[in-house]
Structures are given as C-alpha cells and as structure tokens.
Length: 315
Image 1 (cartoon, rainbow, N blue to C red):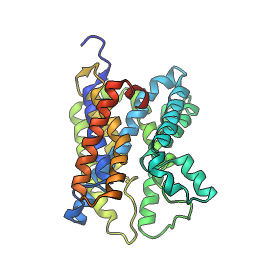
Image 2: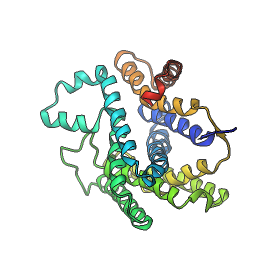
Image 3: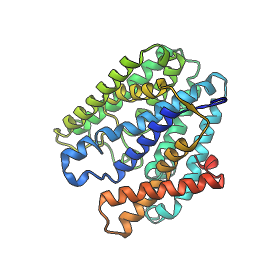
Image 4: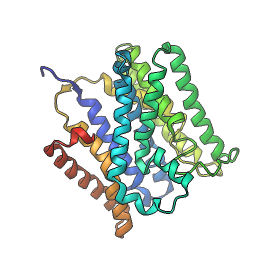
C-alpha cells in the first residue's frame, strides 16, 4: 500500500500483549490453581511490558538520531499527567489517606498501570542524555541494569534482601524506571541502531523467541519454589525473550496505514483498569467475567474515541 507506515505484525503483537496486561490484573485462569497462575499471570503475561518497552526504544531511536528525543519524553510525560487526571475518580479516595511522602511517590510514579507512562518518560529522558553513547557501552549498561533487576528479584524471593518501606506500589524495588523501563527501551534503541531485523534470519529469530518464552515459563516456576513471594516483572529470561519476540514481529512482512490495531492496543492498556477496578469493587463477578467485560468495554470505548478523533490525543 502506497505510503503505508505501520507494521501489521507489530500492532497485532501489541494488541495481544495488551490482552496479557488485562490478564495480569484479572487473570481468567487464576481459579484453576497456582500452576495456572504461574504459567500465565506470573509467567507468559509478564512478557507484555518489556516487549512494549523494546518497541518504545525502537521507535525512539530515529528521534534520538535526529536530535528530537526530548519531544518523545515530553509526550510520554504529558500522556502520564493526562491519564492520571482521567483516573482521578478511581484513585482519589485511596490517595486521600496518603502521607505527604506517599503522595509524592504516588504523583511521580502513578496509579496502578500508569507507572508505565511515568517510567517511559524517565527512560526516554535518560536515553536522550545517553544518545551519544556508542552502541556497545549502551548495550552493556542495558544488560547490567536488566540483570540487576533480575538478580534483585531472585534475592528478594530467596529472603536475602528485604526491601525498605519506601518500596511498595507504585514504586517497586524491581518494576521501576531503572531496572525495567530504561534497559528494555535501550534494547530497542540498540536493535534499531544495528538494524538487527536484517542481520538475523527469521528462523533463528523465531527460535530465540521460542527459547525465551520457554525460559520465562521455567523461571516463573523456579521463582515460586523460593520462600518469599515476589512479582515476576524482571525475570532474567525476559532479557532474551522480550527483544527476541519484538524482533520476530519487526521482521514480519505486511504494512498498513490503518491505526486501528495500534489504537485498540493502546486503548485496551489504558482503559481496562477502569473496568477492572469498578467491577472488582462493586460486583461479585468472577475473574473470567471481569476479564471479558474489561476487554469488551475497553474495545467499545476505544472505538468511540477513534470515531471522535480523540484517540490521537489520548494514545
């Protein structure tokens, strides 16, 4: 298609990842038992945010190369403030009881899923400052930070490290701008700098992605054997799985001018928590029903925003 600008595979994968995020918050398989949750909500679904961040870095790199990276960081920050304002009716009651310090942490890192936008804004700003770094040092920094996040998660799970009182939602000791957002966005920057999709065959890329996914599932099960519960946001296996899965999508043929899939992936991510929060608070519906209604409601509202023209401003 002449003038096509979007990858169907990337947008399709992002929509699937957004569904996984809904599954983290309202896992339809949770009632099947601990194993089901370890393989889904604490397993494969944890690919979602790291892969999103790899794509963020991939699309940030041209702006960095053109000296326009600050525009991306500002847009992420503006979107964060906008969505925090839109979610005010949902979080206002809980925030009323915060101490000044808790209020500051909440304002900086955000309500529930909106930590992603706050973290992305910080990661983008950091990558602007690191834009002149050669590729190898930038990759090394990303690997070290991601490994530190994974190591910290394992240390907490083993009872070797006890996070201080400051580290609770929305500021997690592992799921934060330093150990998650910056390294995975940097992976995307590096992948575009070296033109990785054209340097690795599609078969090997798919093999790496399959291996990475298998390792994610295995690591989730392994973490569960340790004495302390820990969120599986920064598993070591994600360091392979997330860039490899993003690479597979980036290599896939097929372009389109339509924003539909991309808008619906963003809409599902940003809107679903409103449905999940309200349904859990005010109904006795089980998780599969909440999951289904959150997806359906988000899809309908996203389509309404698309038709009104507001989607371009909100997503």
